[in-house]
Length: 367
Image (cartoon, rainbow, N blue to C red; front, side, top):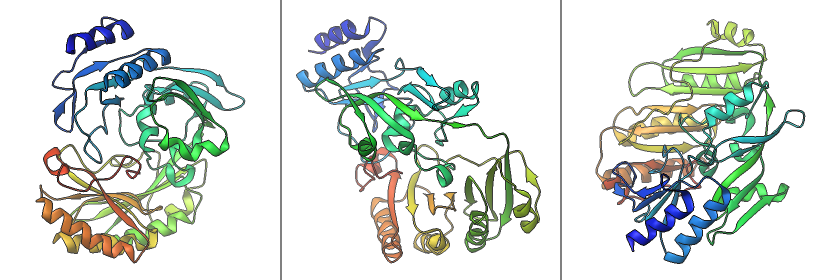
């Protein structure tokens, strides 16, 4: 059966673009069966049709930056790599729209758009994120403060349903259901904006979460594009506000710090790496400081926290590799605190052996 499946994938994708999975083609610590790299929407449909007919568990993969986030997946028989589904077309500079293939790296898209003085107002922290991977989980960075989540900039998408049929979703009413589309996205028409003529950051040190919340509230009262905070487990933290084509001088004067054309080194980066146990916390900005203190109390020590102080959406990293029972206890304690504040927390990622024993975030709960 393995040879027959491989032969069929080669027929669809070409001899250099279908192969048995290698050690790097793992999901949840387990190697997949095969990898296919289709180059067209029709080829994607043929791969999905084959998977449906052979009852193969299929998973799309962009750069793989978030493939092990959230609820662990069952064994994957076939990885559909979107690397060849790349490029953009129908760029209407006047209407500010473009159609982009979902395997296109977000950075490559932004570089191409910048040549025409435009951008998609998104900045996912995953440096290798593809358009499809970003849209699949609505991955957001600092710019969400002003411009909203990536899905809000999607006009319509083309996709292949699980049976291999090419379809399209468009119209105002369909956008909220983007995450619920079954199958594999192949392209998206997105709405663009002009590049800002200038970007400046105002960054101030803070000694504790309460001071961070105070400065973030001050920054949010200005015309900012983002307000982020970085709170290490120990020592002082930082709050930084991004101004795009707006006056940063008043806030800088109020904080007694200079305006800088350069972002702080942690800006737009996750505070965690592979193998960390990571929580995502969403709460009203005014309640973020109390939540960070409550988390430190539950853990018994300071916890690194980074993210949008202006929105109250941050990631926190649990120290070491706690036992599942200890993680569940921390989550329960924090959950009670957040319940009273209409907030929520989910486990984003953990080592595979831990994730299999924990209640992890679903694919639409990660952002």
